[in-house]
Image 1 (tube, protein in one colour):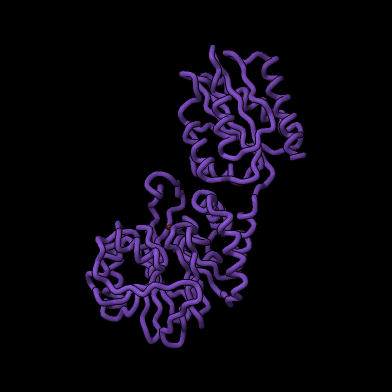
Image 2 (cartoon, protein in one colour):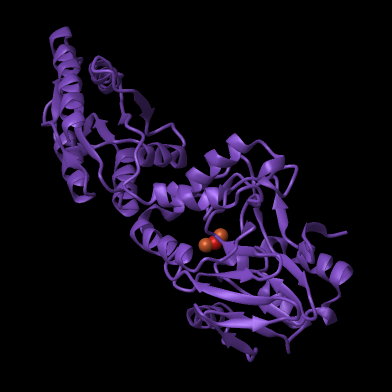
Length: 397
Ligand code: FEO
């Protein structure tokens, strides 16, 4: 039996309790995830999105037995990343004459992913609508949030916004609805999802939210393509997206370091104590051992990012190279920071880190801090004072 969503809308997605990594191995998903697909039973029976191809067999089995392939009249593909479009080819083998509704870019991507098939496409954009009986489907272009083909579908009558990736979370719970699971975890996952996947697109998201709000859609439910459905006060997640898109920070400092013999770690701790002496909260991470998705989430939430590494082979330890690249790629805005590290003879790491931070748009508020071999008490005092001075400068920045 299909899970009921609202009125004549049912759940045809796959809930992946075991998933621990997403986007290959890039993102951690400690609470699993789901690939949400929905079935609308109006005069026309409409399938909204498919699921990731490792689950194709299960998905098709469900459609065959709970819906019947012959009953599907229309397929809406809001976005064709394989976690949503991955089962389309297998489904189209069963129903090759059914029309696919997608954006113009969506058609291009579907064709490329599937060897330019002879399927029927109807391309749509913002302002277009399709009548399916008592309800209409309205489409909202979401270009580059986060793929060129992304769009959302709003269904009149039920007033459900099928938002695809937007407003999603990598979370698998005992219910489809946020109001029936541990909401704290869902909110934490929603923020992690935003920081990990959507942060590079905040300028576009800000404009898009204003555009969607101006459309005055009477949204009663937001059904994303990952995680739980927003049913009670669904616009609260839209409000959060507006907040997260607006140079977001929670005023604390994240210090991320890698260390060989604890010298750089002791510097990190001394800098942290100096920052705390000014009443500014601090979190510390070892970049070689921490979860990279959680680290990126903390960078996103922080006002300041401080990076440290011991010098090896005239540069920073390799875990920092990935971190600097990721900060650059995430285009975090409004962040401040500085760099530090221990060394034996040449000591280039803090300078390299500072250069990477500047390239990533982080405003440097303090010169790099270095200590030779094991930091002396005097050098640790210098680290403490650097943290203190940085916190003071940060408050004025
Ligand atoms: Fe959940 Fe962009 O795919």
